[in-house]
Image 1 (cartoon, helix red, strand yellow):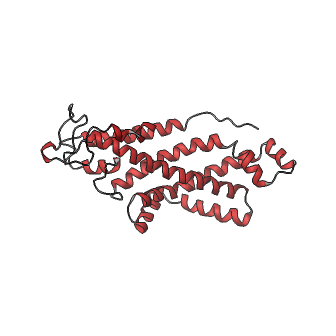
Image 2 (cartoon, one colour):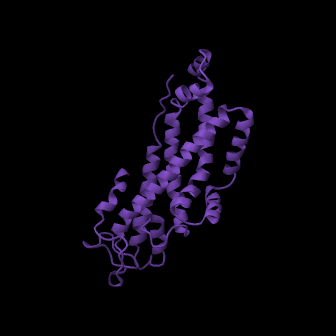
Image 3 (cartoon, rainbow, N blue to C red):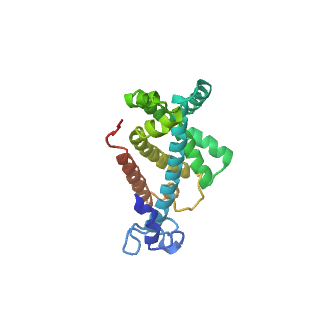
Length: 246
């Protein structure tokens, strides 16, 4: 997955160059995955687009994880006058499918990479907040947390030094699941037109190839399989064993 960050350097052709004479060509030594309806090299666009898709999903998942853990910790351990409104907020977010929130946000902010990342991240914050709240409440009942309070540690110190370190495995694995959600949602929004037209981004590649799918399935297959593989890698990262220590 990290190789996608450097994949554009391996692109054999210009991902934006069009050629009517080379439109919809099948895979060949010159074009390893064929060409699309505008004669653009699918393999080069797949490599360049992979970097964009990966960075968008990573940015959205990171933002959602950081803010979600903060909200989850606040709702679990904060004072009631703060915890109850925070919990009510992410419960309200969970009541509506994430893609609906994303569409509403993009309708207000417009299309573009920044708004798309924000629109993908906001609904995922609620998912992370709900999960981290459960994990933090569970860890908070452990004997070593009670011992930390007993020796006079402040609530903030207990959270930072004891609760969060012993929650990081579960929260980290769930962050990988959020990353998978972010990939799917970001490409879906790009497919719906909330990304710059013609960009070598996997969701855009899917929408660009839909009209020529029967004549030339290569562009759709390449981007579709790439999205599936990246989601599979993200889900594989979410598997593992808890290692919670006192």
